[in-house]
Length: 136
Image 1 (tube, rainbow, N blue to C red):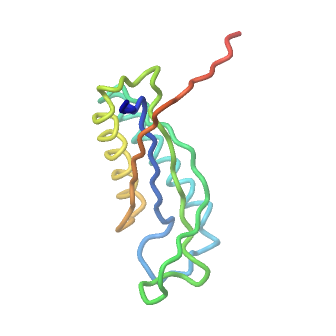
Image 2: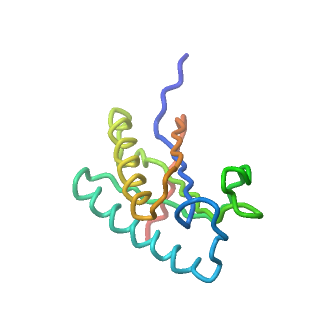
């Protein structure tokens, strides 16, 4: 029996500061996080108006490690990992491809706003998803 995905999970990680070879500018970190939050909110709302998909996310502090020869700051690059998933209550299995396209459009727009040259977006099928909501 083949299992059919009922939802799609996604993860994207991007740096907070543009370019390579920087020192992470700790005195500007809060400003960059605020910029990312504002860009995400703006792009999420625009996407919802265009597609009706809500591309909400959880933001988690991250450190990306790569070779110093590639410009990695000492101790790693300050980054943010964004994670989310489609909610089967609102996104049908036959809409998952369109949902992934919507996620990609929001992430890429935020990547541009953050002046990031690279960002990785990964999608994972979710076989079972339970949306628990306690009613008043």
